[in-house]
Image 1 (tube, rainbow, N blue to C red):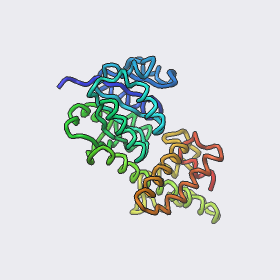
Image 2: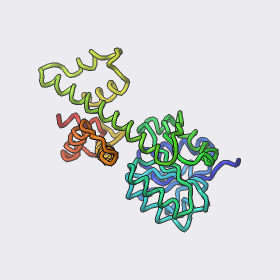
Image 3: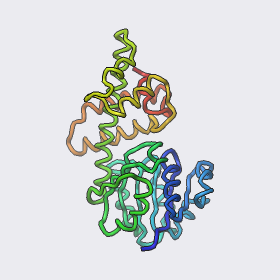
Image 4: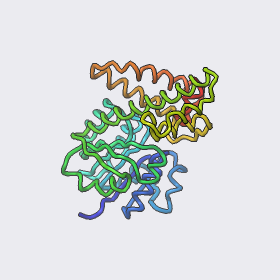
Length: 283
């Protein structure tokens, strides 16, 4: 099978690293971003398209890595006349259960095949080609998207029909936010009990209660190292998608409901563009 021509729509925090790894794998890549200046740094490895339609024209695989369901659906609607019939739409944004259902209906209208494949990982894993891809979609298109998924990730899990990937991503993010807020609140409790909060990180370090993420985010909170790997505003958006999915499934995600209010508090305090570790600032 010949290598696919790839179009990547969205070159933000995640997309820019993904694009470099796709290009490094030798794939013909076109990129587009609504703010062109965010795509221009990729001009050395990809064709920077002036429009989304120009990017997808003739592409075998179209990747969307955009902020939310509205932006994904709007952009794909804009490019409907430029899409190659039978192209694979590799939808990798976190857009929730309802957003993915809308994407599936739109894919049918557009005559393309939807592969729902959100990723686990943030800015650095995207740069390193070390994302974990939670792919879901028809078995027959796996060979076509394999070169792309191999380029961006260290591991691809195929988890069922389109939509299953998104549901698993929401479950994984539920755990991420649980750990994030657990660390933030534990550090804050130590502070309020007149302890050096770093003693908490030292106490759990290397033991059964530790995890790399505990140390990573805990140190970021204490050091004020808040350049966004995953912005707080995006974390709050995703937490609301999880709650929406849980309610639709008849599940009371009580813990996440509290966590979501804490994330919202950080956004309202003006920290939405900082890393999600900035939730600590409001404790």
